[in-house]
Length: 355
Image (cartoon, rainbow, N blue to C red):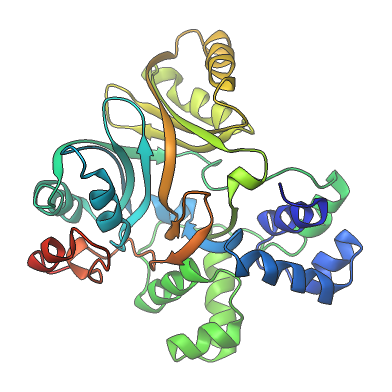
């Protein structure tokens, strides 16, 4: 387990991921230099990191798919490793149940999603079957889970550093904004100067673009942590069938639960998916019982325990859940745009596909 001080730093950055160290130090009543040094230790060994995700305003312009993948015997690691190096793959998990893997993927449109489902995945060595469910809505809780160790007063103070949301209409990402999103997905706390040097922009240009993207909720910066080190070592996927006239209500209310990491409405017979964190796998039964008691019309269709994660929001993870590297998250890329997979077993297959 992490120390109390480390937990507080992570929680502070989950509330305001780009807050200046001066503010974080003030809230935690710790010298800012000390806070920064502790954070550098956490990031240095991969325990915590800051990345980026598509915000709620932009999610309607990007197609999100949840893919249940069955693999040939002994090939699940190869498939997971290869997919983890695709820029349009957000998350890859090993799961228990009828399928071997669960992958969350982005596509710029249905044409690109069709290419992924009909061509790229079937031609990947080791894949035997794919069941796809496309999201019609990502509920507000997605990507906003936090430890919850800070007081209400500390939370309010940190939120003063968060960009205020502005009214927005649906609009496509401009090309420079896409480049900024890719850079943030690898280093969500990168300074404006650092980001600018990578993108051939001035620090002022980066600040202006990033402020606008955050205010319009087109980009969400998030702080993640190795969950086995903070008392949440287990996770599960819960698939529900909910009456269509109750789907919005159930999605909003379940998305507000502390255990929920992702809550998505799906164009599927199983039309609601929850990804939940658990302190113990034995907590799963109580959680399901509580949900079905509160929403008796929500029928649970399937549940899968997550065995481990290969990739989380663009970051590659080890068996303990620490980040060991990152692949720039790019909703507008295809599998063929991605860099070749460096691991054994699939590099030749990836090269044949032009990865």
